[in-house]
Amino acid sequence: MAHDMTAPPERIAAFCDGATGGNLAGVVIGDTLPDPADMQRIAAEIGYSETAFAAPHGAAWRVRYFAPVREVAFCGHATIALGAALARRFGDGVYALQLNDSAIFVEGRRDGTGISAALTSPPTRSGPVAAGVLKDALALFALTAADLAVAPAPAIANAGNDHLILVLTDRATLAAMAYDLAAGAAFMKAHDFTTISLLVAQTPRLFHSRNAFASGGVSEDPATGAAAAALGGYLRDVGWPHGGVIDIVQGEDMGARSLLRVKIGDTPGESVRVSGTARVL
Image (cartoon, rainbow, N blue to C red):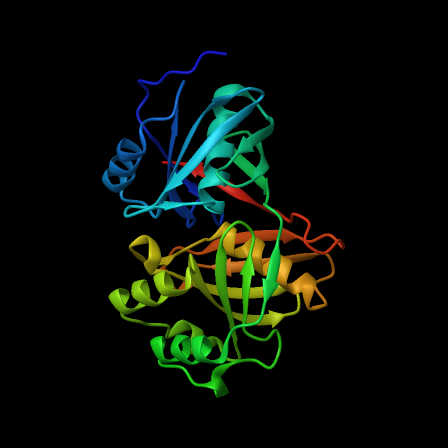
């Protein structure tokens, strides 16, 4: 197949709510990956929370993700955007992706003028949060222990990256989320958190989410597939009554309402499937 390295970066919104919302990602597809310094520069110029770079790699695609200020191991919404871009260029199908630390799949399907995509995440794992780390996280967002739901308890969840999971009791508290970007970046760097997910469980299968991404130089993401995958794995680990699937509404308080669906299997640690729709800008 032919790949046009001269094509400009594509700009695609992932996890849209119909014709609106979603999280913007850059996608660059070519014969080879640019040098890391060039990928970092391009990602900064595009300015979205992440840009995915992809090039053929045997029967798969070699993929790297860059935020405006650093490389990240895995990005869900940029993977959905990449799946949409691959479907547009090469047809509907399942595409194997080789990341820095894992191998995953993304499926892209065209439906008239719309595109849907689904990723199969890296393996998942989760564990508790140290008391001191939790105390500092709550202070960062001006929260107290009384703002936290009894279950699911705070946790560190991973589906390619570490995410701090904080489930709150009150939707209004979630809507008021605010923090200092520099302090958040320092805290997340110190503990290697890619994002901090603040959530409210409206029902066992419907969550509202806000996702702090200071580690990538962005205050908040309107849709975060990697964090959604990590949450799905964590809910499985603690026996949450997810019924095999959860829906996440994210970005609503930013004016960019986004919809993510997470399908969760029964086997601890296995990949989960995160899906949504995409639109090309």
